[in-house]
Length: 396
Image 1 (cartoon, one colour):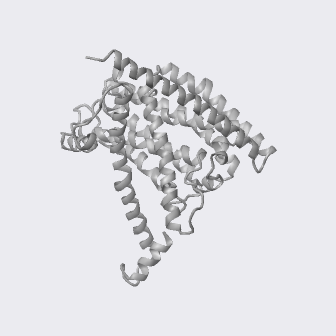
Image 2: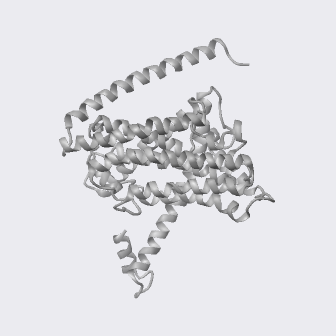
Image 3: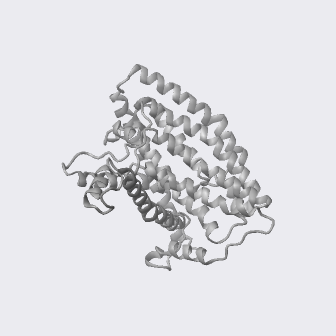
């Protein structure tokens, strides 16, 4: 960023006496807008198409396949349709809060991209409290959702908003506690610092550093799904119970904002997990060219994130929705105590092995490979059985 600003000043594009801080602010604003408009928002739309195709395959259907090649432009058609629809504000609703709520939800989706570490150089702001900033701004979602439920003056919306507030606030606790083990091991809250503390090889990732971080990674991933209102934790928008939950009274573009943020948050969830536990953008140094290395790091980071996004889709297409009491029981009776134990166990581990235990990394990685092989074999078995059932008992 500093090099870019100095180049702009030297070119005279902004005049001779333009202050450095003003040019830096303009550069940050333009780059941020490019990231948000060129990456974040299109990603949310494309993910909606991918998710519908994944669900279709899991449920032995076809999915959207009419608009564009393989239905790829369906997300764009849906977006245009919602923009062209009438934006209705109920008569008895609070108009100010009703209109403001979707923008708060989108804001909670947009702000985390500022500290997203795409590579060693591609990051808008490498804050020394990056992961703390990430968890803080994503919590704004609960304000927008609760505001939408209250302002709609509708019982289904209100119940959905209250459910969302209780759910997000509850799962913030185990999610935050599951971040602490990584902070204890690295001594930093910087997203880039956490990534640099890991290696490119899986046995050097924090996921396999010790048993406590392995459990913490799984708790954080499940808690993030609950905070994002993802199935099987989509109680705030349970269609079978609450029509559309907190979004029942919304229409047009404001209705789209809620679900655009939900789909876009999948990337944020994947980015947090990849940064904390999967080595982030770390890639073996195969070139001395910084551009080549940053491109490879960018690809590595996105592959890890998109894999976790696919897992989230897989979970949504496989598991049924849980009850609200089961949701809260899982959080307070299991995740919170286990997360506390993980934090204490990691502190003891770091006290015993301040530089880490490389043997534990190899053992944990080997155990992970065994579990992955068993899981893949079961998936292949059930996939083949499903194909046999479709062959012998085709649907009408």
